[in-house]
Amino acid sequence: MSKTHLELVLTSAKRLGLKDVDDALAHACNMSQKKNAPFIRTLSGMLDQLVDEADARSQETLMRLARFPYRKTLDDFDFTFQKSITRNALDAVIDEDFLGRRENLILLGPPGVGKTHLAVSFGIHATMHRHKTLFINCSELIARLRESKERNTYLRKLTNFSRPTLLIIDEVGYAPLTSEDSSLFFDVICRRYEKGSVIITSNKSYKDWGEIFGGDPVIATAILDRLLHHSKSFVLKGASYRMKERKEEIKL
Ligand code: ADP
Ligand code: MG
Image (tube, rainbow, N blue to C red; front, side, top):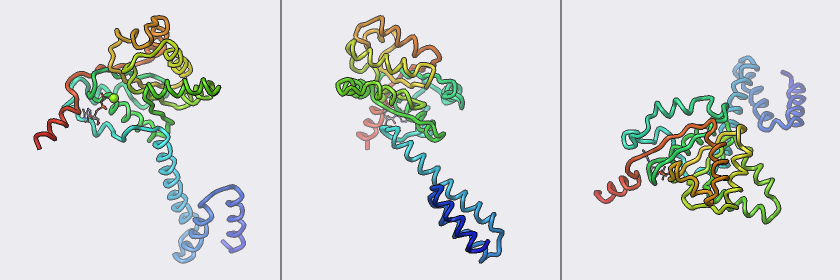
């Protein structure tokens, strides 16, 4: 490729906003001349590398935007400690098309049994597959919605919560919601219904869900109705993993 052609290509790359491509082109041009290798092959290798770097950057951005409380995967989950669930059962539910089918997952159980860990690991898996994910604690979700009502930005906030492919709402039911708060929660679930997956973790069993939502059975039924349609649930049992770790620390 003549110098003039290279210059023309660089100008076009710059105008197209192809950041980093101009350096790669100039480098590929030099390398192919030096090594007497076909230019297109050298360029292809360099562009592959740029694409990999861009993918890694966008994955890290998605991971940051998801706001996970920690980064743990299914491989970090000890199924020999948590025996009420198996890796196969989880894999059967959360298959490759789980998000495509816009299904929901509900993880129930007492504190420390691994609900948040599992929710986070699915979130990380989704993020790695380029799905926009958002993790939020239920009380923070409600606080943000309340605040947006006061600022007259409620609809915009609702849109923020309906946009991610996967929304994880952690710790639903730790504190009961007022009936006003329950209707905010209902709006989020309604917006996402059949449009995007939701993962919920809760320490309350289904029979106690009425109490969570301000003692308002109409709202509770409406929320459950939408959540449970196209949903899978797991009830985790057993001792808290936190206590196991505490005991091991004390022994040391
Ligand atoms: P919760 O059920 O209260 O949401 P978490 O998922 O937050 O519990 O678990 C509490 C801590 O214990 C986390 O650090 C989590 O990674 C760890 N943990 C819980 N269960 C397991 C498990 N079976 N294997 C490995 N770590 C676990
Ligand atoms: Mg938790």
